[in-house]
Image (cartoon, rainbow over all chains, first blue to last red; front, side):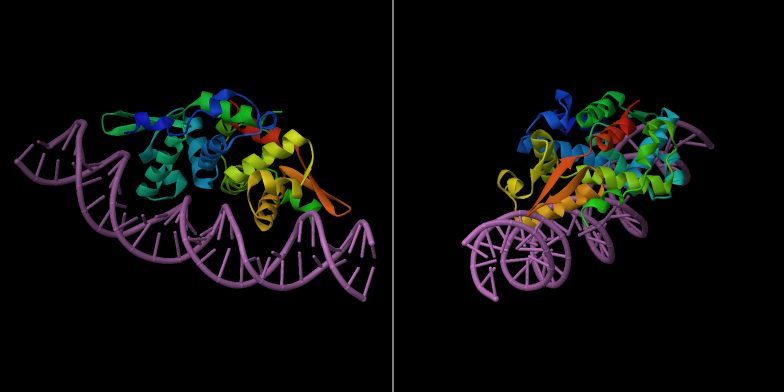
Length: 113
Length: 113
DNA sequence: ACTATACATTGATAAACGTCAATGGGAGGA
DNA sequence: TCCTCCCATTGACGTTTATCAATGTATAGT
């Protein structure tokens, strides 16, 4: 349930076309809103930067720095994973999260001129 | 009240450092969340693409394509302007909106590797 | 002055969101 | 087989958000 949750946001992102060049259809807009919505929370941004800085991190390493409860962390990792921005791999007892750089780059490309 | 509203989001964005390279402080995270939050709505994304495609547009030209009421359009332009993503200039009866490419680029840079 | 147009603001309402306590489900270790 | 640890899910609560009708404030034209 962790691995395949990363493509709930459809691939309007993958089309690489910057926002300015497209009239942007209704469905694409909804999908992109989910992607940016995943980035629109301070806790998730800090979570993302922590995972990116660590290269890899399990949830137990995030509760402390973020100052949030375990269910809340789980909630945020799920949203980031649904947006395809991170992936989780379960090894032994721990779930290790890492960022998906291509997804970040694709999101960045949408804002380029 | 339109022109000076574009810098309510502080300049954590201007620092150019990609998300991955910074542990990202609490205040910066809050500011960036406002920036991405402005992009996290389908109506605002379509509004942005319309303005970007037109180069310049007044609110009266947006109500039709977006299918939203005038107060709703005003609400969204205010949020985008607060995030610094668009600027409004009042000429005669009309307020003309255009995108702020540097701001878009700065946001894009945050997501780069 | 009067009317019409363009936009902002206010107030209200319904939906979505962030948060946590409580609970559940696996994976080790004794 | 227990017990413990890690994480996901559920349910509930308060806050925020998107939306529009109604109203306010200019500006332009007659």
